Amino acid sequence: MLETLKRGWWFLVLSGLCAVAFGVLIFANPGITLKTLIVLFGAYALVTGIFTFLVGIRAPKGAPGKGVVVILGILGIAAGVVTFMYPNQTGQALLLLIGWWAVATGAFEIAEAIQLRKELTNEWLLILAGALSILVGVVFIIRPEVGALSIVWLIGAYAIAFGVMTLALAVKLKGAATSVQSTARRMA
Image 1 (cartoon, rainbow, N blue to C red):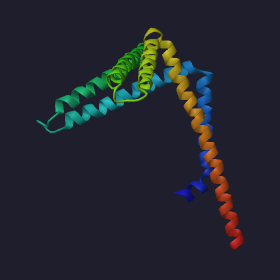
Image 2 (image 1 turned 90 degrees about the vertical axis):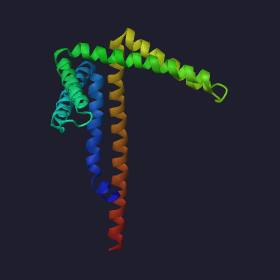
Image 3 (image 1 turned 135 degrees about the vertical axis):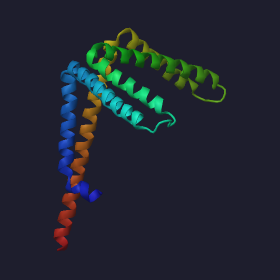
Image 4 (image 1 turned 180 degrees about the horizontal axis):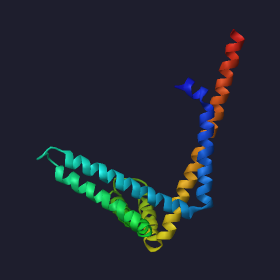
């Protein structure tokens, strides 16, 4: 595997450059990125809904769970269609769902920390994590556009960091490949 990577170091350079470029494009135009993510979600929901539905209707008659699989397929198809018909509302609904999930998670984290305070040391860290979850959730609920933008920026930052690390790995592998080649020449 290492030898394959050493010979294909240039592919890692291209991959890293593409990731960095993708991250930069996200920061340059976050609005288009969010719309693209919503469309991709719609496509994913529609395609998986169709496949799930087909699996359900092709299951043998009387198979356990057949009805549930068919219903899940229909729900996936509906989610995809609704996403394409109402992309802005889908994005807002998704952010509201994330917001309420974060608030509920934060409340449970705080309750768990209080309940475990006699068994844990530094339970304040779990309380702090819960408070942060609640804060993020409230921001997503009150200002969903801020939540959407932060998700897009997080994806952009990840793409840039991943690209830089991939480029660093490529440089390291190229150096290792060059070292192996020069050693082989000296031994020949």
